[in-house]
Image (cartoon, rainbow over all chains, first blue to last red; front, top):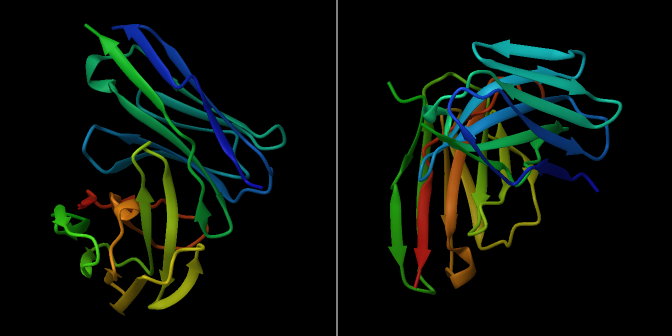
Length: 110
Length: 113
């Protein structure tokens, strides 16, 4: 069964810290993996997409890595800001389907 | 310009009623999706259409019927609404089914009383 686990479930950090969000998944036969951000009461915003052949992707202060063989991905956020506060969702794609983790709720305190 | 839009944003209705949610994308994508996010914030795919053809149907009760009149639209009709149908429903689209970024709409919060 294809399952996705995100650790931690919640994280509170002071502004300026670098932080790492973890995602693990069963079944390494993924096409790609997408990281999303969801603000309260809003839709999902795509942050980064890593294809199965890639090891990492970077966008601004965000860096996502993928180790397909071990079923792991991490999202690194540098110099966190209060505006980064949101729920971060990891979603590997098997076939045509994204399977979502439960998310990490991030709070960045000023 | 909104890339993926949904109407209505909120929907409150009684058990047993029939309701529809509409989705439109102006990105020129070939594939569209419906997802359900439950009260515990768990997000799960329901359906996927590619060029108006149903390609994914995830063990969803047949009270739920998606309809794609054209590539840019994917509507969700729900018959005989039940309390457990209360959730946020998200529409999404992507250019290519397996490899491309999925773009999500703002969601429709359905409350069944």
